Amino acid sequence: MKPTLRGTMIDIALNIIVPYIIYTIAHDNLHLSEVTALTLSSLYPLVDLIREFAKDKTLNFIAGIVLLGTATSIIGALIGGDPRIILIRESIFTFLLAIACFISLAFHRPLMFYFGREFAAGKDPEKRREFSKLLEKKGAYDTFSMITIVWGIVYALEFALKVVIVYTFSIKQSLIIAPVSTYCIVFATIAWTIWYGKRKRAEGQKRRS
Image (cartoon, rainbow, N blue to C red; front, side, top):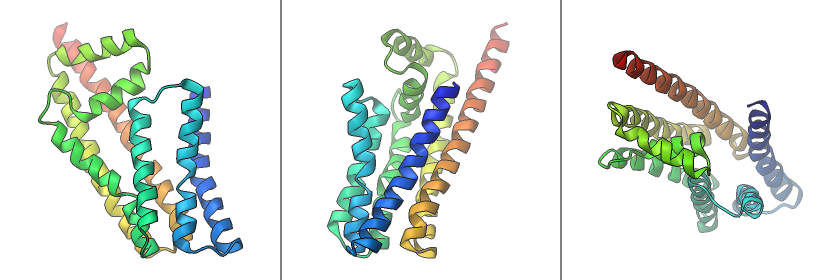
């Protein structure tokens, strides 16, 4: 777990610091417009994703989400306009994820089931099959539904917070404050998800015993 956690923290730091550095160099040193600087700064996550794809030759579900989010960011920057609006456009995908969470409740597999499978099983076919069998257990659908509802609310609140940050701080400050706040919210929600999943699993084992 330690190497994985260390690698995750490094990736997070790079995804905050590198776009900030790119924006600063492009805007402050090269004197490019804020729109162009934001466009360039949004390219780093895409480059990082391409690097991972070149190494693994595959894109998992979560990587696909990241790719779509990055594409939304780039499109938002290329459309142009007020730089603050561009920053908000970059988070529209987050709001769409919130909507997707609630829509997925109408189907057999809520959206967070797929996220959970990626984290728990990765690319292992056997583990993925075992994880998919979880929905056959009593109460499993309700558990994944509750997790999906909470994440849907969190995604919506994260988008609202992004709007507040963008219109409260400068563009440069927002490039640091917004992702830091997002990662804090996401990690807190992940911690709750792990706790809730363990609690429901313990309750299920207690009922069976």
